[in-house]
Length: 106
Image 1 (tube, rainbow, N blue to C red):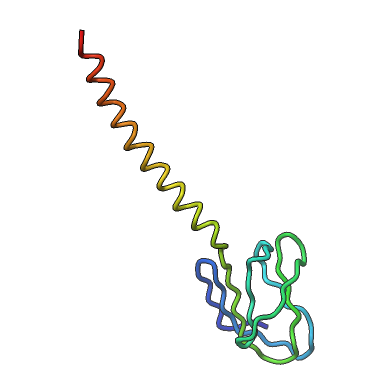
Image 2: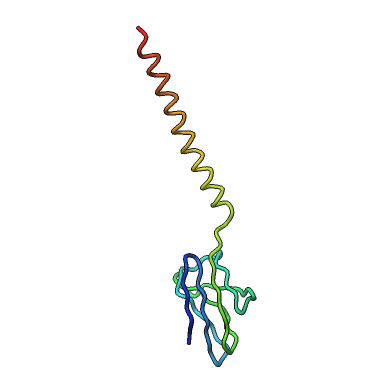
């Protein structure tokens, strides 16, 4: 049984209870970058199927936080892409001015 569910972008907080040790299955696409903590202690996740994440669940009521952590290289690639776009725009304008100068001369 789950209670107090809160779903945010890249994060899920919930309180769940089960009288027996079992598995808790979260319906979200499995990826190794998902981090799940039970009562503040990070636990290992496993793939139930490509569309579900599972964790070993101890008996009783517990607070769960599942959070997706994007790898650092994705941020670096985003910045590199933005810089490339800006450089392309800047150089295109500069070459357009040079082309205008050379094409206006007889």
